[in-house]
Amino acid sequence: RRRAPASPLGLFCFWCVGLGLRRPAPLFLLAGGGRGGLSKTTTLDPSRGTAYSAGTRVLTHCGRGAAQTAPIVPPHLAALPNLLSLLRVLAIVPFVALFYFPRPWAPNACGAIFGLASLTDWLDGYLARRWRVSSPFGAFLDPVADKLIVGASLVLLPTCATAGRCHIALLAVPAVVLTLREILISALREWMATQGKRDSVKVGWVGKCKTACVMVSIVLLLVTCRAPHRSAVFDAGLALLHLSAGLAVWSGAIYLAAAGPALATGWSQSASPPAAA
Image (cartoon, rainbow, N blue to C red):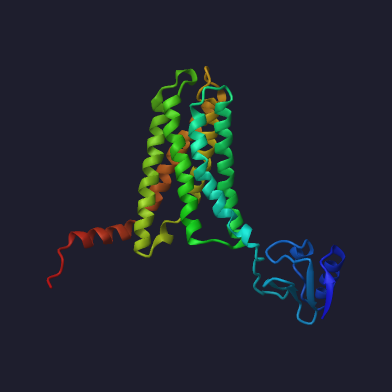
């Protein structure tokens, strides 16, 4: 064995050695990153085509079909995904306060807070998957944080619909549809989990499209709902909100259909008389 610094030249040489052994190193090793990134000092074993990262438990095989393990992040970064989810919950307080703050810049500030919260919704999931630091607490906190800040926005928007004297119903009706759908599907997932069939109602592409449309529409409506005149941005946000309500009904029907057999079994068991002791 020999020691080689994790420089571009050293990594390139290691890759060439791997080619000579007909075990080419993955290209992401050349960048020192990816799921099997190298640390600053790496022990190379050309005879086995294996890179051992010094000071960690990371083992990256260069052979074909070998498993690749993610790098172990420092402890102070392992909690970052859950911290981002918690920040979304804490952001509700200044978000609600700024919504009614009597300053011209307040609507833009609300839109910025919600937009940043939406970005952290993507970021915390990405980091948890990339670093492989997913936990049951994170799986609980992430959807709860999303539902809390989205629910607060859907409640607030109809109370301040002054753009071109927009009728409150245009905002209230899709808000009611979205809120009731979230309550129904959340309860359905919890019940399916007790039956050991939670995977049958996992989030699908229609639900993901609904979430994206809701977040974009809320940002557009937040920055324009208090404007004295109705604008194209407000109309676009309103159209996206109604589209989100339609997608919510569609995805909800998909989840109910997937859970139909389990619901029918549960109903029949509850309707049948208890067996005599």
